[in-house]
Amino acid sequence: MTTRTPAVAGQFYPASKAALEAEVKRFLSTGAVPQKVIGLVAPHAGYIYSGAVAGAVYSSAIIPEKCIVISPNHTGRGSHTAVMAEGTWALPTGEVKVDTVLAKKLMANCRELESDIAAHLGEHSLEVQLPFLMARQPGLSFVPITVSHLSYDICKKIGDSIAKTVKESGEDILIVASSDMNHYESQGATEKKDRMAIDRVLAMDPQGLLTTCGEMRISMCGVVPTAIMLSAAKALGATTAKLVQHATSGDVSGDYDAVVGYAGIIVY
Image (cartoon, rainbow, N blue to C red):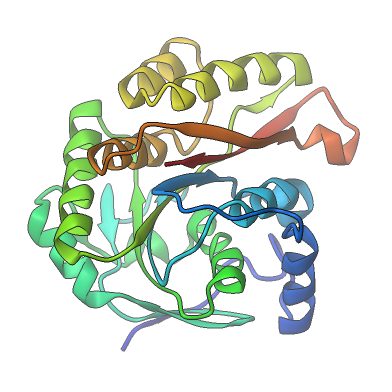
């Protein structure tokens, strides 16, 4: 069985079990009332910057035992639509099993998805979601999917296939899209661009999201995972998206000249 070892422990989040558990607990809200959701968007920067937004969105959702987590491919390695179909992901807080049955059903329903581990080995954007998911659902198993730039038609095909697979399973399966928002512009420019992208998500408009980010040069790195998640959620009956929290790296660093935006959004 393949074990995917941590790529960014000690960089994006603490490397020790105790420190990581404490940090995740600090970011999770004890006052939130979690609700059943179909999908969500969560950020993937270093926890010092995006942990508060991640904690807020994960606190707002009931996390079932099975999840599909879709992340962007930052490394350029592997397939453009890579599913790690078996094995485990090791983290300081324990191991998470890949749901092989669900992964194989998903690939059987979607010829666009390929079994590929190379795209996952150095990718941080999926890895950083798992400590939050594990904290909220100790019985977690999941299907990891990492994607590169894709057309809307392909995003919709993958989203529809995810929805078909979820329906056929008869189980509660959460779809997580990993994404930061606009990158390395001023606070004002980032807030403006983030708002345009967030408005398309709140409108449940995956095609409009892809178009807006392209035309307005919004560097939302997880725009493709978000478009896939929205397509799947709509096919599963979702009608509403809600912004839980938005922030930028400048809110932590105090440097507002070149910030990264973060949004936590639930879809139900």
